[in-house]
Image (cartoon, rainbow over all chains, first blue to last red):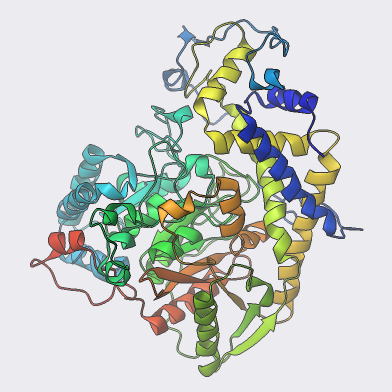
Length: 108
Length: 526
């Protein structure tokens, strides 16, 4: 079963990375095929494992402020900033529809 | 002291006694890095800061107040650990030019003990890969490609220019770190291990590669790949040195709540002489398809070594071994999809010029910043996490993970102390051959023997064992019980002593070391 163009497009929107070319799509197809081998394993009655440390109580510290005040350092690595703000292009604008976008999937 | 020396006994003693100064040592390592530039092991060489650290160390030695065994010792760190003031790139365009404002906990610990940070080593982009061939700064070359041992065994080709293109890979993804330690440019290096990324290149480069138990060493500052499996890895030239590094790095870190809170006591490894109380398990599933007959024979020989020395050697079964790599593939891509979401160009890293909207800026930034491998894993991960796929792939993989971890539990409960397995299927492949297959295929093939230990969070170590017929290193792997690093390393040290792995013979190193200091017969034991 091949992955539908709708799903491919949906993935590109979720991931915000592109398949770029047929090789990229093939890569996903092969990855799915590879992962399908898991169906061979009988996991009846088996609980999913989140962490190998599940039997332990992990450390939670007190909700106290112990560090911070490093605005200057944190802003150093940002390309676009203004005073103490990171500057982003306008939000709440959905990605253009498939037809309008320049994506390789358009051709499919 | 020679650049080939082991940390504990030789270099440390030499520094203390003043036979060599930290600045001399640092300068020699820096010079060697320059002359082995063709290996491409380093992305960034922090020459100025390293010399400054060496000077400070020298002052401490003069005052008779060294900070400990690591004071003045040159080390290298894989470029996916944050280092304050030094570029951290993860070998990706996404982080080119990124100067971290803080040190990863493990880096801080090393610096606090006076270690001299020479630079950041090369890797596969974002530690995704098993060859150290897929980073934006190019592939890392295995120093053994230039060794006398390899050259002697190479079939002479018709054209002399072929020596340049016949070099073999280091394995990965911590290839830069392995190459750096193997070529004597540093005494120890940090790597990371998520599916075998420290043990694989260790085996191919003839060095010791330790993957500690998950939860023992802090991941704070290690740019994450798979949060539930990543661990910082340790690469050294002998097992004793690995124990020294472990002693400096292990322990609870309040900044990483996945580090356990049990107290950790650094240890010195005893010189084990009696192995009769040991029970070694040989998992039959590790005789995996593709395992070279040469390595199979070495593995068998090693088992006999233990048997003849009086240990109990038993064949065991880890039935879900062959699903480990599939399980890893799903869980890794799923966690990667989540972890890579932080790279959007706003707070740090590469940012696209696209200005139309936040989303389109993010998309363009990520398109420009990530290579095929990273993008591929993000997309696969997102696929497995889709509502309609979640149970079938992600949750299923989590269940299989438990089965894999249980396999190990059963074996250890039955009285086995340590498991002995091969680390890799073959010796290092020539680069030209390696790149014929894509990254995902290679990773799936190469991680088969190392991956399950990450699934179960167990400690594992690759010890250089012997040279292959092609004159290249082959390592064998020991897997131990959770948090039983002392036992694991003790057995590894015993084994290392038995096999006496040869020292690499590199022209470059000879030139830097000759005449001034004693020749060391072997770098692999104290």
